[in-house]
View 1: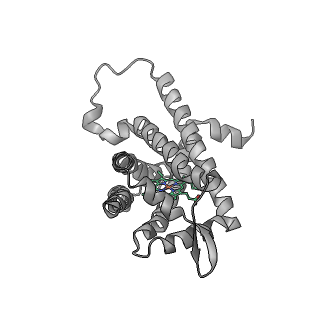
View 2: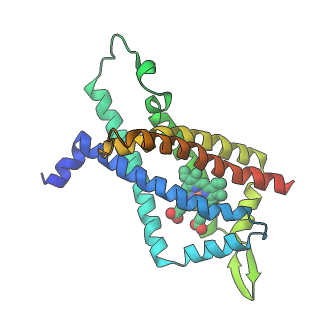
View 3: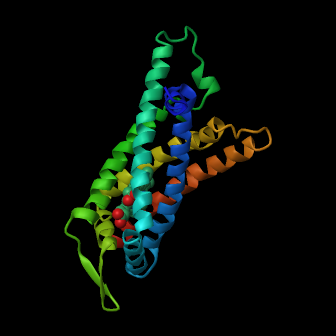
Length: 227
Ligand code: HEM
């Protein structure tokens, strides 16, 4: 067995994969959020449609997109491997378990939170990604050039209150998942220095509230605009 496969099949290696893929996905969330906030500009979707076109036609972004899907897959697969390993190492529960006093609710429910986010992601990709790539798209004209009207697809989806509610609730779960995942990734990478840990915890806490809240704001505002 090479050192690579040895590392990847050890508990520490699996945790490292979870941390590195998690941090990449956190970075993706920030970029995705900044792009999506353009949906709220008062220009009837022009900035967002031009942005969507520039992303779709950029070969570098297409490579990053493949990496993104690969990292999501790795993150899910390794979370299953780790939780199966944890269960098999302790088949009998502790006689006295005070988990709720020494760990947060999020940290004890990362698997459930991750599964809910995965379900959200599948619905999200079917509704937007799949439709935009393979569906029949409305088009729009800017300065004589025809573009896919991605804004129209998003606006149509967010005119449905049920869909909006689904997004808002899912962002709540994303917040809880991030509230543990952010600091946990830094800890796994050994970056939990006495000096920096409180800062990392605070940044992680802020991130887990602000990012999901801004993601949730988009469907809420677009729903109100659709009335
Ligand atoms: C208001 C919230 C959101 C909006 C409006 C939105 C919008 C979109 C749109 C329009 C696309 C298709 C882009 C294209 O192919 O041109 C997309 C792709 C995607 N979204 Fe979202 N999104 C939101 C939230 C999220 C969240 C919270 C996550 C993750 C938890 C997420 C993960 C993804 C992924 C993984 C893709 C595929 C990106 C790729 O090609 O690599 N999105 N989103």
